[in-house]
Amino acid sequence: MPNLSRLAAEGVTCSNHHAVFPTVTRANVASIVTGHHPGAHGLTANTLVIPEFDPHRAIGALEPVLTEVATRTAVLLKPTLGDILHQHGREFIAVGAGTTGNAYLQNPNAETGGGATVHPDFTLPRHLHQEITERFGPWPDRRGPAAPKMARIVDILTEYVLNDRQPAASVLWFSEPDSSQHAHGVGSAEAVSAIHEADRQFGRLLDWLDRTGRTADTNVIVASDHGYSTISEVIDVDSALQDAGFPPADQRGGVAFAPNGGSALFYATSDIPDTSARLAEWLMTQRWCGPLLASEAAGVIPGTLPSHLIGLEGPRAPSIAMSFHWDSTANSAGFAGRAYSTSLAPGQGQHGSMSPHENRNVFFASGPAFRRSTNIDSPTGNVDIAPTVLHLLGLPEDPAMHGRILFETLLTGPDNVEWVTETHWAERDIAAGRYSQSVTLSRAGTTVYVDQGSGGLLFS
Image (cartoon, rainbow, N blue to C red; front, top):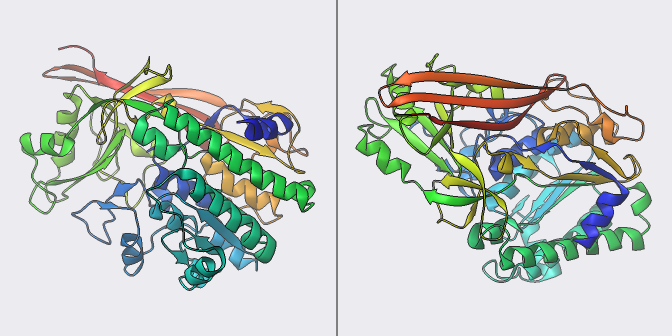
């Protein structure tokens, strides 16, 4: 990746960067644009239960389901960068070729609140789709090679968004290497090829900034939404739940299950108070179970840790959140990190768990506001992007945001910040043996980052 390498060498590398848990795209997109952890912004995972929409059914956070959700309740419970910029008379525009849910969440109120989202399948505002298609032609086949799709979104960003509309902030979202790693595995030839192409298209953006004389006054941030692991085994959790005697959520004592790759969210029926406790104890006996977090509504359950520790507590918090068990074994391409999954197949790539291979992701920044040729080892995270962007734009800080302004990355900031690491433990003796778990966090001020979580049955 020569283009990204050059940007990183000239600017700032945050080598201790973090995703939010669950380490899935839509939870992290929402944290990137709101500066809040998933419990607060309410879009807790790719698949989730939104009680105000349907208390008994897990939904996939995709279009057109999110539009339907918006007719009944707020999709996000916190304002986004697009909302905040609109309040100050400025624009935020996102262009991307990832999932429809990812694109929608980047600026869900663009239809009425200003700015725009541009995606192959839809735009916000809706009328913009025809304008984009007429100007740039039909979108490349989404099932075809990645290169034409990435080229198209770079064209739209440079020729339409940056040149014509000149928003205060914009996002370019590549679907690679995520798509290739899911389909072919981490480090596969297809994934490596996709990485090369993503870098080539990123280079086109940097070249355009140079040609148009904008490099000197443009700050560029590059981040990933999560890391990656290789699937060791796929677990049919839904069937296992039924076999264990937990009925569907619309029945007394039932449980709604939301699969999210390396994690699983469980929503217990509230009419039987001990459902969550029975569920947690059953999960502790499963060989694939890792860390378990319990919501305030579920109560204090021995052996679990509270959801608020990792920012998952909130109005839409699952009763129990589980990360699958993981290890650091290398895959066939030599990349460390394996974990159980709710979907796909062994050998393919996945994310969602508390594995450090999935919790840790990348952050690079370069531009007039940032330090030169600097590595930052203080903890940073996706939750910090929104407050940092607002600061770069000279807008007021929102003290309610969970993220912080990354002052240590800035030319005018301090050389470092104070931070600590802490580990939280929980154990429980059960009939099958002893379940034990630990979750390690880093803290900088009031901002919390999940380093990793491990757990499982110690002996039987």
